[in-house]
Amino acid sequence: MAKNEKVDVVIVGAGASGSVYAAVLAKTGKKVVVLEQGPDWKLSDLISSDFWGRRIKHAGAPFLLEGRHPVSYGYQSGWGVGGAALHYFANFPRLLPNDFKVKSEHNRGLDWPIDYKDLAPYYDKVARDVGVSGDAKAEEIWRGRPACIYDGWCHVGCPTGALSNPLVTYLGDARKVGVEVRPWSTVTRVLTNGNGTRVTGVEYYDQKKERQFQPARVVVLAAWSAQNPRILLNSANGAHRKGLANRSGLVGKYMMTHYASGTWGIFDENVENHMGTTGAQYMSYDRYGKTSHKGAFGSSFIVAGSALKTSDLGGFANARLDLFGADLHAFMKRAARGLARINAFGEEMPNVENRVELASDKDEFGMPLGRIVHSYDEDVARVWNANFEEGLRIAAAAGAKESWSGRGNIPTIHLMGGTIMGTGAGNSVVNSSPECAGSMEERYTRTAMTLHWLIALAVLGQIAFGWYLQLIPRGVPDRTVFVNFHKSTGLVIGLLIVLRLVWRLTHTPPALPESMPAWERSAARVNHVLLYACMLIMPAAGYSASNFSKFGVKLFNAVLLPPWGADDRDIYAFFNGLHVGTSFVFVTLIAIHVLAALRHLILPRHEILRRMLPS
Image (tube, rainbow, N blue to C red; front, side):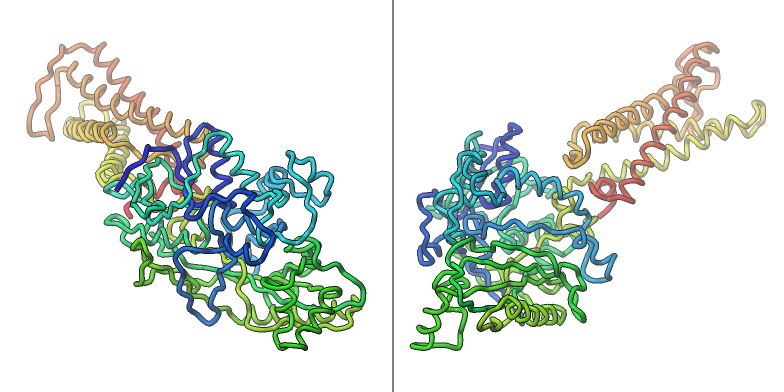
């Protein structure tokens, strides 16, 4: 397997999300390589034709489709640099606040670990970066990109750049600052070190079908929603037998789609339906409440004014599936002038049984094919039907001369999910950063965990015992026995602390996640340094004090260790004072450490505490 030069970050997928990661990381000085399984498209390769446009749709290994409502994935991903964002429909709808706490508010579905207010600034930033605007003049001067001419060919790629696809936005910016985009690179596995605690890079096959290794400090999986789980599951190794990021067993689970209730209408006037954007000219959240339709549950997002072409996706020929020959010809002549459609997209609730899994069949690179299993529930059927009924009422109120529902099998649109975001490694694949939760986790070794908890319990007990000794009057016979026991356990703990420190210096600890605020990471490091200092000073000072007295140390009241220093009360008082004083500082630092740990237990956003707990 050929090995390439190590980089800071390797990104799998050059689409909507991969291009953003590439641009943002490269601008901070990181060395970034983007791997894309398809060709390196240029704007000049994009042609306004349904036939030619199929080149940029999904290609590569097929997915096996099962379930009562198998997923139609032809439009869900992209083939080549730019990904599915080469053929998106020029609309930027957002999630709304009522999407984030569905479980808490309705006892349905699941809650997100984040809120709308967490996402809103990023929605705004993307809107500014790509030039989301309805003003053609504003678009014309936006970063020198031409204005949209509303010719309705968004779904096959925009050759002018007005669609603001990755080639002219984030990916274009990334290339300007040195990001390497490597096309014809099919990633099959994410690789880790021997004990599975850190990623080391990815395995991929180049255009010549030769196996390559791209080493990297960080791996970003930004392929489409079914491919990311497939790669994670195929990356299983001795340390991660169920696949990477799969401690919860949820990789590939909770796959979801949207569905659409399309209502058609023919009007007398010329509605110029070939013009506009593929998505819609108008968007409405009027039915976005979870209980907008009586007896049904789930949001609906309504669009109208979609550009219509003759064939392919949503074209005239597909508007009346019951017509053939002369009847279809007559209908299409009328439809070319007056046909319009209103679409209501419905929401599917997460279902753990809807999933991506590995099949026994393999692709040309020996990677198991993915199997997508998907079925809708009764709520979907209720919302779907309710939207059809309302669509017919809207068409009649708008003055359509003819109207009908575009019924058939419930469609599956916009495949999502497979790498669920949750509050901890037990209920998620990624956390809110989003980093893999509990896979490459940066866990401490078993030896480090054992020493940590053994020393923690011993030190707390030793401090409490030492403070108790201060209450026993001198001259009491039992006091000498207790003091020698305290000294003896102190020596043993001191040796454990030295062993822990040696282990710490020779085994790189897991890095604190970048998602933690900088001040919090700095505070944690300072606290740890001070804790180690106290753990070394306390036993050293106590042992030294004992050796500047006439008593020395009688190890566990059995073996006398004669003092090696003079019987000097002043020196004894100095070291004993240092020993006792350090204990108070130590307890304060421990309290801070425990409070921080409790905070991470109650608010486990960064998965910090789990790293020091047995798996």
